[in-house]
Image 1 (tube, rainbow, N blue to C red):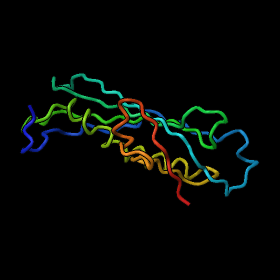
Image 2: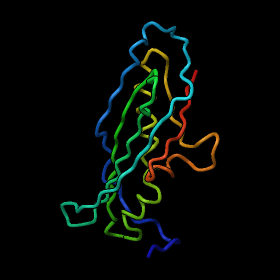
Image 3: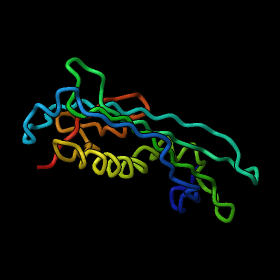
Length: 159
């Protein structure tokens, strides 16, 4: 049981980029550079895997996948990013299990890294950078809270 008055007692073992893919829609070069990327649907999915580290401690890994939804017609930007965060208990002060932490806060922990990667990747695209939202403008549930259920938050674009 977690003692809410203590520190969580975990260490981040690592944050790793697993895969990345990006492409423009086939007609991108025929469109003006000022074309806005509106209503891009983004899919978010999370998966937690449990194993042991070299010292036999619980090693929990969350893999967060964020990508443009497959729709017709295809979006101007099509991307797929997978990042992982690994967490182990702190042997000096264990408090919360690594799985409990990732189930509660894993997606919110790794989402800023994914958001930065997508912004950097799309900044080099024809239509400017895309900054995926960590909240929904129309709803009241955050996209990262939806991640384990495969929710689809909206994205925003800077101009």
